[in-house]
Image (cartoon, rainbow, N blue to C red; front, side):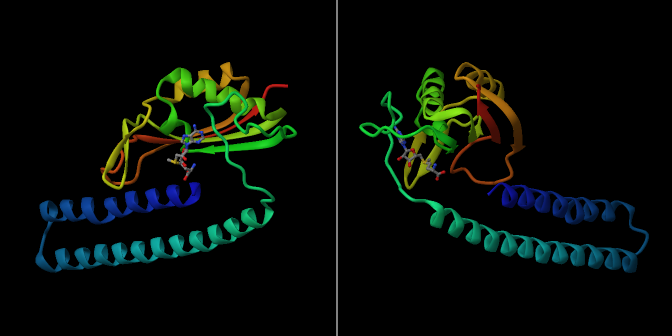
Amino acid sequence: MVETYQKGRRADDSSAVQTGQTGGKLVLNAEGQSQKQTISMKSQGKAQNEKTRRNLVHNHDSENFQKKEEKVRSAAQHVMKFDLEKENIIEPMVLPKADAIISALLLDMISKEKEDYVKYLRRFSKLLKPGGHFILIGDLETTYYTVGKDKLHAMNYDEDFVRKGLDEAGFVIDRCEVKERAAVSDLTDYKHVMFIVAHKKM
Ligand SMILES: C[S@@+](CC[C@H](N)C(=O)[O-])C[C@H]1O[C@@H](n2cnc3c(N)ncnc32)[C@H](O)[C@@H]1O
């Protein structure tokens, strides 16, 4: 998911430069019709190449992700429900402490207030071994997302808030990447996507 997203964005950005900006300058600087046509054909060729390259990247990533999905599915031994509203989120079960937990696009959607977000981080932390890894993926500066015809609440927060929240919940951040939004859609209004790898303090 991360790779597809980044590669998709770079591809869009470079094609905008090649076709849009070069084309605009051409009209202003043109010395003759033939030169205009040649350059314009070159830029069409570049756009076509870019499209082909993007398709190849997309297909390659899709294959990789199918393989990764199969690997994860075959490694999963149990699937359990959990409820972050409960102090023990897997109640009534009690499990040995985990090596790693991944939370993707979840806390943004279910937290009503910022206190909820930090409370949920603490609940995840309780399930982890000291030193265990926590991978957190979320959308920054979002106010809503859409499911079908319903426009649903999302909590609006920034990177600074998450950094402080993770610290309060007993995590140390090993890596944090924040990517600017590339998608063009009004289904949701997030501005950035954030990827964090952290570990529970010893
Ligand atoms: C936007 S979806 C994200 C699903 C998934 N993480 C993904 O990336 O596709 C939000 C999810 O939060 C779950 N959810 C809502 N309330 C919850 C709670 N109290 N505890 C745990 N999960 C909850 C919903 O069932 C839903 O699957």
